[in-house]
Length: 231
Image (cartoon, rainbow, N blue to C red; front, side):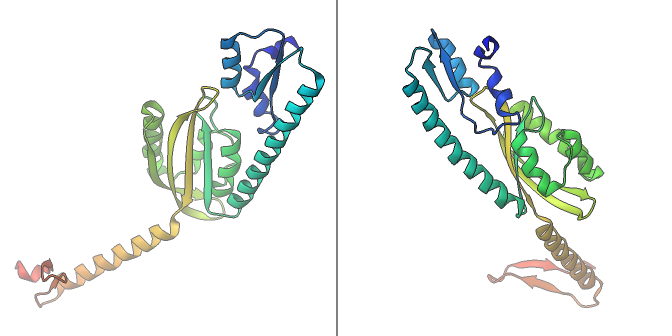
């Protein structure tokens, strides 16, 4: 239809019910260079003159479909791997909130049902919610690297610690996207907390001992003195 001559429909088409890997080939009677560039930037896979023979159009479509099928297979394999792992992938369109790919993959890890920032912030532990909000605002405004760890409270799994590392890009359609990996670091955080508890318990016991205790490194440098040395 005439309305589909505008390449701005392509991002909506890819985010619709059809596969995001579906090829898009534009046909045109006459095409200016800037119009062709706009089409490619919007995500078009190619252009053909409307006067091109049917055999050329068919060959171009077959080649594009073969590439799309390979991309779709890779996408499905990655989705399956992530579904059974503790890794989540964020593909966040900042203007449109959650991106299609990011929300589906991240939900498996964080148990998010709604496609919105509110859904993420709702499960973040209240004591860390403001800090995470400010960190996200900072990276969206200044496009720097993002690296945060925060606890989330899940209905079945309870409190889990999540590590997120990401960055901002401008994609081919000139959309600002936030790409990141999130991993479950609950076990590491628990081990770290247990170690800190043991160290604190040892220091408390050593400081309460009537003797003067000390610790040295392999080079003989003193690294710890109990309170008995100071009283």
